[in-house]
Image (cartoon, rainbow, N blue to C red):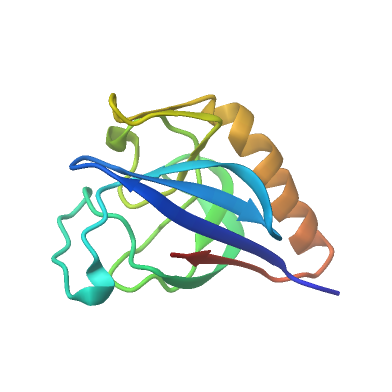
Length: 141
């Protein structure tokens, strides 16, 4: 049984946020909004609550979020970060290193829209993979 492989390909960088395209097993899933990419993997400096996670490959699990009071996907073992989740939101204010899915982006406004509509099918895909005893990984590039 093959794993669920998510690929986050960052493509637009603004002073306030980063946009990426998320693929699930090679198929476009949604857009992702993150904090500013400070190239941590190249020695960039983290600013708490305002920095995208370093590029790399992370296992994704689902567990209970005390902050959001519900089950959400969690990226494991992200260097320098704790509690990196995939959850709904629309702007950099809604993320502290987390990944915010959406169906449309507005880079000039620092915004992502239809977050709930993008999150639900992604969450269901992750839930199904884990229920089927597959591992889920995300590669951030």
